[in-house]
Length: 240
Image (cartoon, rainbow, N blue to C red; front, top):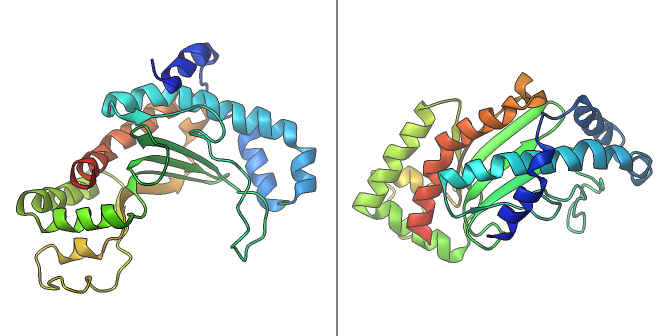
């Protein structure tokens, strides 16, 4: 049994009953008072309303995502599926020490990182973002992606998949960061638009839904991730 599954079994009895109002109160507070002093004064709130419900949510949702993809991994802990709340300010003009949202990551494959697709979750006090895919390709993955786009079978499958995902719900396709196709590629190619991508993801962003405060939130997120899962499957077949 893998580490993430074993851990999930041990704490499954805790259950997920929704993010409590204290979660959103803490997120509003850290957004308004983003200082180490405020955080230390509210560390108990951080543990009780940020970390603990996030662990329960990951534990509840993770096994369901493994039914969508057997290679999905998750770890219901900070520095696992739960991102640290501390910001890396070394190379940023924004020196606020803390994030004002909760980030979760369920990744494809053994290695936890951004070099493989996965499912991502971001929740602030007011906004929810759900998505699947890869935000930025590494050098080898980018080359493989472009080759797949030009491939008749794989490229047409992706074009059809993009249209299908966009038509199946409130989803957008992201990652087209280039203004022109890469040098050496035909700008008139029928899938030239897909060559503008240096990452590929699909997702939605909107207001926090009422079910976020109940156990039904797991069902809601699973439904969205199921609609987005084909993006991950295509990326796995094309870039790995």
